Amino acid sequence: MIYAIHQNQVSDQLDRISNALRAFSLKLTGNNVDAEDLYQDTALRIITNADKYNPGTNFKAWAVTIMRNIFINNYRKKVRRNMIIDQTPNNYYLNSGDKAVDNDGETNVTFNELMALVDTLPEDFKKPFMMAYEGYKYEEIAEELGSPLGTIKSRIFFARKKLQKLYEDNYRERA
Image 1 (cartoon, helix red, strand yellow):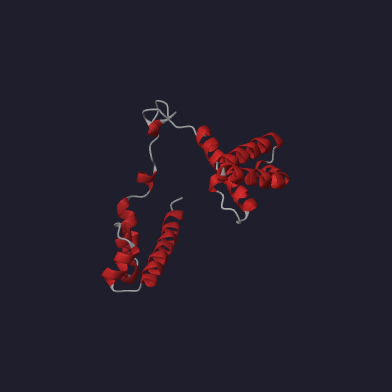
Image 2 (cartoon, rainbow, N blue to C red; image 1 turned 90 degrees about the vertical axis):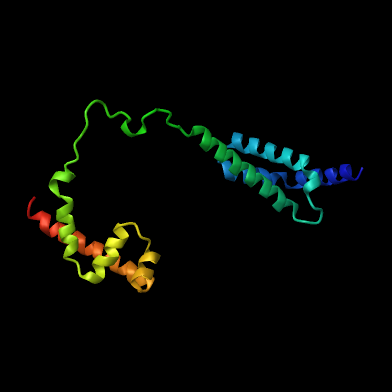
């Protein structure tokens, strides 16, 4: 009996805010048909979950939250449904054909030439840069070298900038 009275109160409150809910659903969807579907889904959910509403709290906020959650969940389902998952056995050579393209980067600049550029860096910059290159984290480098984290980050940044400039200067002449 109490449940029926509570459900009637929820239905009455739903009737009072139905215009506001319809407007909000239209704002969310931007389409009259989708907005009506969203409103109906929300109304159904409100009525079936009337026992979860706490009398004396803001009914409109509760209803709007339900509508927003339904909209978000439907949107996520729609995105997942439209996602194309590649089932081909070899994802690396999709549509590559029979020809392999050589990487000319190895012939233009060798590793030794790049290391020679790194060797020209001042030791304060070269050591943290090489540690970062070897895979150490900034925090580990700072601890190893006994320097503040910000100092290590800026030295690595400036080492990269210096190497870019050296690379451009050395290899622009060749081009």
